[in-house]
Image (cartoon, helix red, strand yellow):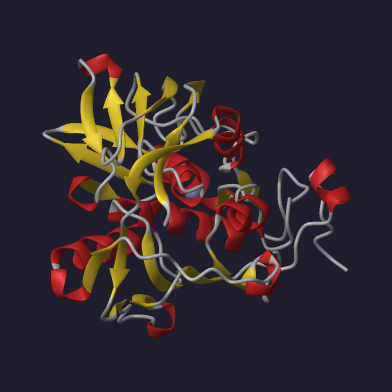
Length: 322
Ligand SMILES: [Zn+2]
């Protein structure tokens, strides 16, 4: 039997929000069983915003939650870390509108959570087990090749497959397939950073976005290369999309027993999947049964990925061309 968890000790960090440019302070605090992941706006009398599908607000370049008009932006990297590390219950106190972007990856959050430690609670963990598939496509009528697709299917463990395709010499087609567990997330995805294209920087600024964006917190792709290399992985872009996907799936509100496939998807499709899934209780059941425990090395479950050699992890450098 597995038990619910929370963190053992409070931990905090601060930094600038990617889109608003607003400085914020985040404090993670242990929470009792059945709390789930709950943000609290400390600048608004601790107003709680549960990390759940029904609180998803507008979604474009980041995922925002909104409850009774109170907004919280760019939740996905922090949620990806909390959810993948198996933390069921935690209060995330924040004194502004946007979660800090830090280095653009989930690694600083993973390090925080590891320092905080995990504490077992005396209550059985519950899973949201998908029993019937749900899939849909967002067709691009003008360019059907650009259609996006997402689906969720029954499985005995939490698995994702994420496919991206960007016309860029350093990106192209990248595909990530893995079982999501604390160690696979930490080693394969957590260090992958946010990225954007140089040609999009001015249009995004004009839309009031990426005001906190810098070469320290996002990879910027030029027409034929990268402005602020080196990359941490040759396929850092695909890995980051997979990280984003997990952060959005956290809004299911419980650990998933399901396989999720995302094809050229993004935050809008990820969060629609969660909302549609939660809206139809014939698609899932809540269970306290165990996920399948595969007695295999962690990387065997991810044939499309190779682990980062220790030497590369130390320098953060991976050759991107050969
Ligand atoms: Zn992201």
